[in-house]
Image 1 (cartoon, rainbow, N blue to C red):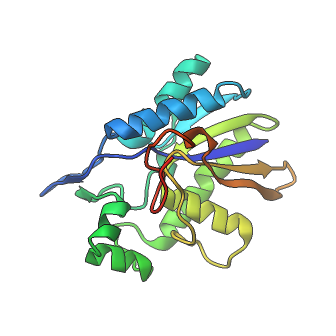
Image 2: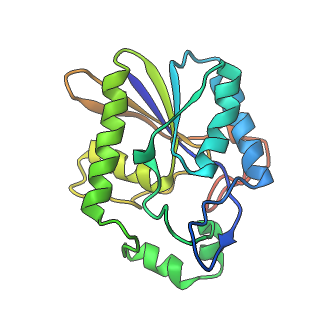
Length: 207
């Protein structure tokens, strides 16, 4: 089967004093999601999954609508900091040289979930989706930490890395998953749908 692991679009900044931030998409993020949907609408996709977080569900919504499907929610592909009271797009952290950016570069963990527990739930959730859709093509809209972790696992990097590369907004990362258990990466950071749009893509690029 073919697994399309997709990062959400650009979210708004949200910093709360208590409770989970869980930001929605910014206007540019909604545009990114629309471009993604039109790009993928010509492919035969059998199911659309999303993290329960607002930015992932809102990114998946235009694609599911074009395909005439309901979004299937997979709690196991929520981001590692899903319960954090703040969300600041990493581009803003980098531009301000924020201490949180430096912590990310250092690979420091800041979550109420251990790295081992994060790894276990991500692998279990994605492999369950694979098992449930043998011979099909499935889109899973999730988060940068999930994408980094799963692809580092497929590449056999020796650790479940949350930041070995930067997935651009609405980037598509394709994995071929054989019933024998073999996993092969087909593409990483596929963003053709954003070329020429002028929309932000990530740390360094505009579409």
